[in-house]
Amino acid sequence: MRLREQPKRAYPTLVIALCLILSGHVAAQDPQTVENHAGYVPAISGGFGYVHNVSGGVTSLEPQINPILLVPFGSHVLLESRTDFTGFFQRQHLTSGPFTGKVFKTVEFAQVDWLANTHLILTAGRYLLPFGLYNERLQPIWIRNLQDAPITTTIGTRTSGSGDGFMMRGVAVQRPSYSVQYTAYFSTRSNINQLQSARAAGGDASLYLTRAHLEIGTSYQRFLQNREINSVANYISWQPPSIPLDIKAEADYSFNGRGYWLESAYLLQQLPIPPIFRKTQIVGRVQHFFPSNGGGNSLPRVNTQRFDAGLNYYVRDDLRFVSSYGRNFSSQGNSNIWNVGFTYRFLFPLWPGRTK
Image (tube, rainbow, N blue to C red; front, side, top):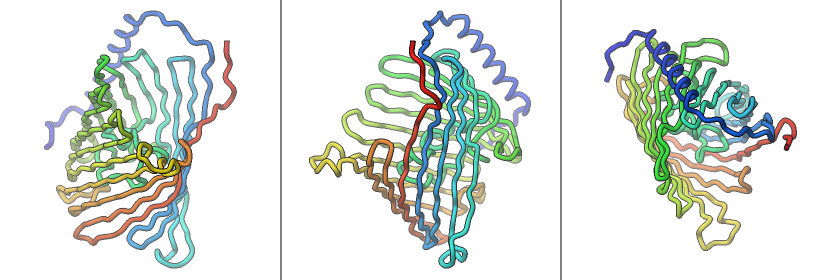
């Protein structure tokens, strides 16, 4: 469903005005706080890993490292950046011959965050588009339970998954039993190498129920170049307090199609089994995509279903072995997808902190 076309210059003007009004309002009401003089230390974080993938009989080798630079300036300003280095190597003739390929580099975000107070954070620069659950929260190799992204991930994240512009976010309402968060952003069009982005505006809002550990949210985006389209995502994330279960589900809608995915992950730590096996995680995901207007834009052009089952083992909190099997069903042919590999999460300061 297309909305009535709006003047293109209204989006940045409106968001800038809102930022100025909100920042002036919170600055006038914010009481003086006691500063922490222990020091704010820059750090390097991120993760690396390796995935051996076999899709439809074609093998690919995919090493990856995602370093994150964190540079705080006092207690209210943070510079953060993440760069993705991913190698993609396949046999010269797909099923035979030597492996050839290259390493792809992508600047996923490079942004400055200003913490006005607990209700408002202003961001400028390059940021991950906050659409749905996957792009902003689950994308890093050391976080996602299954190494292949859901089919509908590209809905709301064109063209690069990142935006160049500004964003504001925060907690609108905070109560002991629930909280409401919001995000609003505007991205300009850019063809600069490593900083590609599309002209788009949108936002996200969710309700989090504290006792149930349940989040219900929705995202909206208006794509503002070439064919102007609307994209919507509705999602749920639930981690029951009493059991080590993680359930996530999302439904996405756009001009090029609609689809859904449902994923659950269970850690065996509470079962009466030998301790060495309690670090095992069982993962399952089902998904279905229905193309509209011919599909395309990195989405399937035919009705597609997929089932994935994964088995992950945590050697430590920061090191795990990953494996999964998937089966893809479509009129273009069915195929099997195998993944096996490992991920490692790292974090270390650039210099020792000072105490006082």
